[in-house]
Image (tube, rainbow, N blue to C red; front, side, top):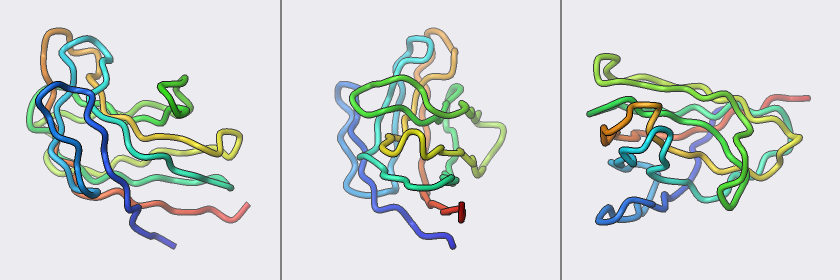
Length: 128
């Protein structure tokens, strides 16, 4: 069953405001794999898919899951570019890491500030 996540984003880019909800226009750092934003924590208890609907406006923008407090990556990385248009990214979360944050970051595009419109974030709980 799909359900929207009521998450907000903490921007880590100077001059870019935090979001008040799941829809946000975000920018990334120009450093390779530099973070642009982190979601509020997401708690999972079973194999879970997180669906992010987004559109890259500039650069190569990556999405993945990390452990809280800028911990290690705990999911595969997915990237989008402006030529992909509106796209859904499906990220698998493993219950071995029950607390995660969704990160938006530069996807190895040195010197380029990525920009993305996050349209929605939904979660699909899988029955174990």
